[in-house]
Length: 201
Image 1 (cartoon, rainbow, N blue to C red):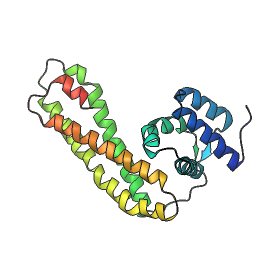
Image 2 (image 1 turned 60 degrees about the horizontal axis):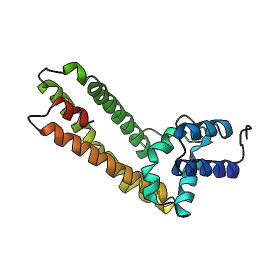
Image 3 (image 1 turned 180 degrees about the vertical axis):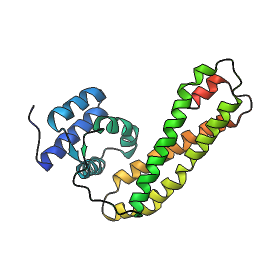
């Protein structure tokens, strides 16, 4: 099927089929190539509807959560946001978007430092550990951001009948919280090694 699908119901059916292929073990790259061939861009609302339909049809939320990163990787750059409305400055959604952007900046800084750890082989790690603690302490503030989403946004979505995606996102939030906590615990040790620092990533 080489022609692009330009009908909402057909697009959603095709996206559902592609997501199920991921869950059946097909590679992300193969699914992504098929998505590019058949769908190109898909409106964001349809992505949410498809996830909701899959969960309503019996795909376990845990399974969706497990492959959440794969879904994101396949869809990256292929979601059409042209139908989304402008969000006024100060609106809770606009604030959450800005918080996401700031979190991405801190994550990028921490990642850059972690990727350069090999340069510090045989050196005193105190300064690096302090920098990493600072980054991960900042990242732990994401918990406040997640709580706002979980207690303000998710109930609103659930009242509109969108229950699956918020549950999956909440599960993803919990995973990230645990990863950050684990990294902070490693960084609190006084005798942490370079290998343990790498593992904290």
